[in-house]
Image (cartoon, rainbow, N blue to C red):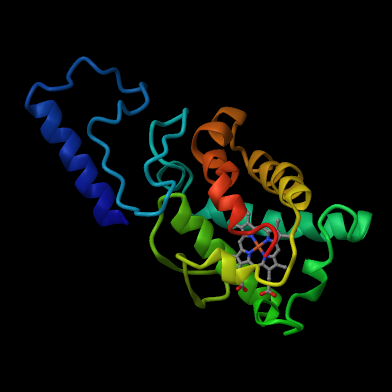
Length: 197
Ligand code: HEM
C-alpha cells in the first residue's frame, strides 16, 4: 500500500516536472489523468465525486471495516425490530448448515462480506479481517445465496435500509454513494445473481 502511494506521488511529481499539470491548484480533486487504480473488481473503474478515485482509494481500510460492521449491526437491529418482515428469514439460518450456503458461521460471513466489498470497490483480492483471518474477495454470489429465496423486495430493502445508511452513517456523502458505490449493487445482473436463488 505504502509502496503504491509512493509510486503514485512519484508519478505526480514527474507529471508536474514535465510541465504537464502545473496549473492545478493543490485543493482540486485529482483530475484522474494521473490516477491508475490497482484493483480489478467491478467498482475499480468507478469514480467518487469527492475525489475522482474509486471507493477503496477514497475511503480506505478503516472505512470499509466500519461500514461492514455497521451492516451487521443494522441487520441485527432490523431483525429485532421487525423480525423477518422486511429481510426474510435467511439471516436467522446463518451457521445452521440447513443448505450449503448456510454452512459458515456469522464471523466467517462477516469476513467474507468485508473481502467481497473491498474487492468489488477497487481494493485487493484478499484481506486479513479484524479476526486476523484471511478472506478472499471474488466470490460466487449465486452459490453464496443458493436456497435462500431472497426476494426482489428484500434485496431492495437491504440496500436502501441497511447498506446505504451504513455508508452515510460513516461519512460517505449521498453524491459518493451514487457515484462510486450504488452502480454495483443496483446493477440488474448483480441483483439477479442474489435474488430468487
Ligand atoms: C449487496 C448485496 C449483497 C451482497 C454483496 C452479499 C454478499 C454476501 C456474501 C459475500 C456472502 C458469502 C458469505 C459466506 O459464504 O459465508 C453472503 C451470504 C449470505 N447472504 Fe448475502 N449479500 C447481499 C445481499 C443479501 C440479501 C439481500 C440477503 C437477505 C435478505 C442476504 C443474506 C445472506 C445470508 C443469510 C448469507 C449466508 C451466510 C452464511 O450462513 O454463511 N444477502 N452474502
